[in-house]
Image (cartoon, rainbow, N blue to C red; front, side, top):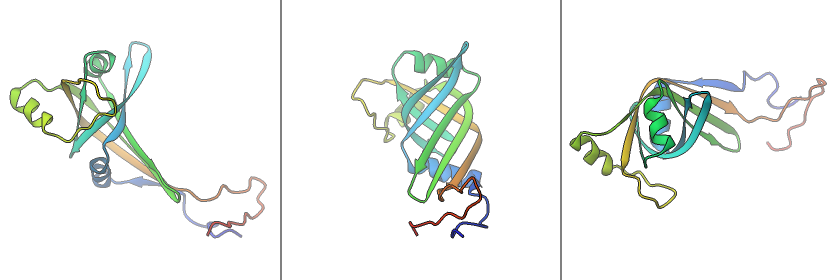
Length: 152
């Protein structure tokens, strides 16, 4: 019998508090929103402060779509050898326009992957936040035969 047989479910919910902490540890995620009949997904470099996600962008589909969408989804994940996790937040996006907000956002450590000019700052105020952690155990044998886990 495997070492993992009889263990609890390999999928666990992550508390909202831990989701907030995980968001603060990373700087690369994805935003998704609906534009008409299309679902759009974009990578973003971001800064997290509590339930606020701030990113820089240039005029275009990402900016226009995020601002027009009723619901913007923000997602990060991490895949390790023994476990993986995913955090998903929902909220509304807004362009930062007040001089003090723009100045504060410009001082954030948001480092773009591509060296292009991005002068627009967008903030997603997350109203819902959830996460799941996944143990990466060996896949069970579909025929019910014990699987020998040689990695432990």
